[in-house]
Amino acid sequence: MTLSVMRVAASVSPLDGGPATGILALSRELRLAGTEDTIYATDAHGAGHLRKTDLPSTNQPHVNLSRVHSPRALKPALGMSIRILLGIRHVDVVHIHGFYLFHSALAAVTARLMKKPYIIQPHGVFEPYQEKRSRGRKNAYMRVIGDQVLRHAAGLIFATEAEQANAKAVIERYSLTSWIMPLGADATAVPPNPPGTPHEPTVLFLARLASKKRVDLAIKAMPIVLESQPRARLLIAGEGDMELVETPLAELAPEVQERISVIGFVEGDAKAAAFAQADAYVLASENENFGISVAEALATATPVIISDQVAIAPAVETSEAGIIVSSLTPEAVADAILRVLDPDTNQVMSQHAKELANREFSWSATARTAEGIYRDLLPPS
Image (cartoon, rainbow, N blue to C red; front, side, top):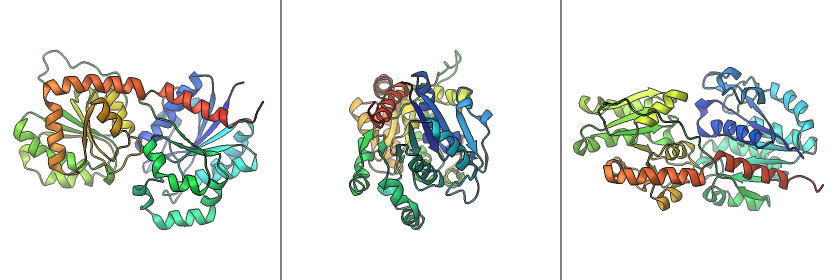
C-alpha cells in the first residue's frame, strides 16, 4: 500500500535555517522511497515572500505555499486553511513541524475533524532554553488551543535523545508516544581548490545570525588564534541580525578585522565553495536540538568545534570528529580552533567527521525511520 503523508510547516525558506531545509530534504527522500509526501507551508521568507521557484526543482511540484500575514511571530496564513482542508481528505497521516504557531493548531484541528492521525515534531521548542522565550505568548497559546493539540496528538518526534529527555514533562503530562528520528545532512560536493592556491587555515561559521548561535565568540577568538596562526582567517556565512557580527567586529584591531570575511547567506555552489575553504567549522551555540549545519560540515569531512549544548555533541566527541567546548568564552573557542587547525589533528578528525556523517546522518535513513513511524499510526488492515 502506497503511503500518503501531509506535512505542515511554518516555513520552508532556506533563510530559516536547518529545520526548514531539512523538511525539503526529507520530502525528497520520502518520495524516492515511494511515499507520497506533500508539504503545506507559508511563504515566509525573511521580510519578503518565498516563491516556488526559490525552492529546489525536485521539491517545487510537491509544496503548497500560502501567503503569510501579520503578526509574523505566529506566521498566520489564512489561505492555508482551505488548502489543508482540501488536501487532507486523501492522506493517511499528518506530520506537523513545529508548535506554538498558527499552522500547528490549524493542521491539528483539521486532522482531528477529518479523523486523521497527526504527529508533532517540535524542533526543539520544548527545550528549557526555548521555553523561556516569549513565555506569555506560549502560555496564551496553550490555554486557547495548545493543550487540546497535544492531548489528541498521536505522538511526538524528536531528533535526539537529549531533545526527548528535555520534553519529558510534556510527554508524561499528555501520555504521548515518542520516537527518535535523527536528521540527515546533504553531502555538499566540495570543489577542489585551484592548483597553486596558497593555503590559509580557515574557520567557517555558517548559520543563521541569531543571538543563541554566538557568532561573537568566533569573532572574539580570532585575536588569540592569530597570535599562533597569523595566516588564519574566519569566514562568516549567514543572514539575520547583522549587529551580532558588526558590534564585536568593530572592537577588533584593523589587522584582525582583515582576517575576517562576512559573505552573507550562501546556498548551492557558494555554500560548497565555503566548505571547500574550511579547515574547521565553529558553532558555539547556546542551544541546538540537533544542528543540521554541524552535520553538513561533518558530511564534507570538516572537523567541528561546537558547544556541549548542541545535541549531537556526544556523537562528535565519541567519534573524535571535532572538539566540544563547555565554556562559552572566546578563550575556550580559540583554544579549540588552534587544536583543530593542527595539521596532523585536522587530518585525523577530517576522516572521523566523514565516517560519522556517513554512519549516522543520512536523509535516506531518516526517511526510512519516518515511514516506519507513519505506518505505526495506520489502522490494522
